[in-house]
Length: 215
Image (spheres, rainbow, N blue to C red):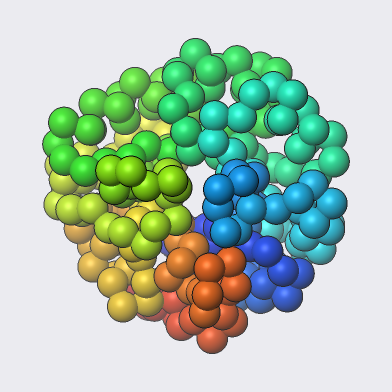
């Protein structure tokens, strides 16, 4: 079993949930963001979550969601973790942990060294961090754009006191280099294993996991 855990986000079909579980993926990401091509309705998300076998952690990706939206999601969908991918403050992270009693992962967009200070702001309140590429100016999506950042920015910052994931433009072809440069023990991807936005490809998932298991 590889020591690098994998999260595959943006699952939209039961077959994809079963494929990631079979491949040994640790986290399944379900997107609740209307602008995303991977957005799910509550009934669809509930069916996917119920299809997930034991051991596959179900993560809800939201973007600046208010309490009403989160209440509705968590009332309908059995989930294991919240992923905040918007402009949520450290105070908001703490409030949601207290309100729902679930682990919270905060996504942070990185483009240059000046962005690294955000890691320290959230490291004391989040349960996990997702270090992602900052979206391009004008992008409607805060993540899932298939873009990488300069991984060398993390070379001197490989270790924090909490678990973290590396995201942004990862694929079977570059994950080994990404892990080598950053020291990441968890990685996250979406478009890197898709045949089309929101449609995961079992062969690409298997190839990615094979690359990770070789690390």
